[in-house]
Length: 126
Image (tube, rainbow, N blue to C red):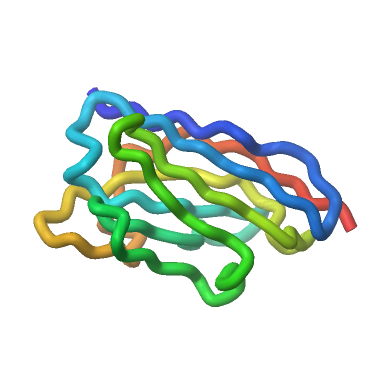
């Protein structure tokens, strides 16, 4: 059974940083693209960043480019999201999810992902 567990969220002031972690179990982690997503109250879930199974390829949503960095450690079955220069509009519940992909690509389509974690709350105060 695939399980993804996010951690690292919290309350931070604007301009601050947080590092989210997503620990995976029950899958061959190195065969899956991984993604971070967020959902703010009253809004649809959106992709924030994605990383291919090798870690060589990444994708970022435009609003987080230059501020967020996605990375992974396949030996630890963990994907990370380093978030710097946080803004109040980054406030949301952040989830990770996985996508089995034969090709080494950073999958961008939300519908391709499954096995969603329970999420971790990120709140950025102004």
